[in-house]
Length: 375
Ligand SMILES: Cc1cc2nc3c(=O)[nH]c(=O)nc-3n(C[C@H](O)[C@H](O)[C@H](O)COP(=O)(O)OP(=O)(O)OC[C@H]3O[C@@H](n4cnc5c(N)ncnc54)[C@H](O)[C@@H]3O)c2cc1C
Image (cartoon, rainbow, N blue to C red):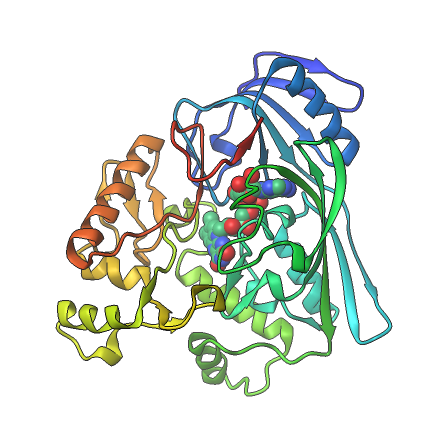
């Protein structure tokens, strides 16, 4: 960590010029002008007062696994949520109440859940990042998403310097969306999340990849722990579990969201691809998209546009395991990542007329996707 000075406040230490690349899974990005490690509401409020007196923007950082920081860095205060406690209690009505501080690693929650035979998040095993990051984009994988089990978000409102709670219904959850990454992006520092899991639940085997993998291994009735392990193996094969030394995992996960399109577009895509319409991937879109809308696969579109696994521009490349992740092949700059992103978006647009939307949050770029930092 490059660090050129620090200020001690009552409960936190503010550091200066801290390079952010090591705090992100892409390992890209310049310095934060100010940087603070925080855990409690009190520490956040104190850091917030420091930012206010200097007119600084504040950005809340978790595990940095859904984040692209610019080469210039961020001219504000980064509030890094670290550590904390993870607790679980039986709620007396067949549920396990899990209370996790924001800085806890998400996968630790999944491990605890399956150990306690509590279902609802077993398919979310192996997703990098922190607990505090899970409500932000309503993390999801293999047919489960956090919105189904989350019951409460505890947060500090950075606009009004107060602590508050959101019930699930107040979070505005939809596919990869919540109030925390849309209209109120960057406004809250989430300090704790609560989930309700189902004790003794059967694992969710909605995804064919997963059920097939388990069946092939003779697990007709897998436990929650076996299901979570299977998810980890399948994800690892795709470079979707962080692994030191595997450049394919130096990414921000899926770089593009699966686009929602009108059902008629599926026919056009079949024509473009020269394949039967049944071969064009289509999935159920959430109710928020309205009737006649389906999701299709961003990866399929990228391949249709002629990009193959491992396609590279400079030191940025698509994963060699699948085309949906943009990876840092070693020493890539944020500018190289952005150039590859734009090339893929333009290629898909030209071939299919569909504009892919990026998933990771941008920090320190002149025009950001939403307001991830708050003043
Ligand atoms: C290999 C790999 C695989 C992945 N697979 C999946 C997947 O299957 N499904 C999926 O949904 N995602 C996936 N992701 C993306 C990422 O892991 C998740 O979005 C994760 O929840 C991000 O959490 P984080 O703590 O790393 O957030 P960060 O990257 O640190 O931040 C992301 C956003 O969340 C905000 N944020 C983070 N913590 C807080 C907090 N405490 N309070 C308020 N705001 C906060 C930040 O301000 C920022 O806007 C993957 C990423 C990688 C690298």
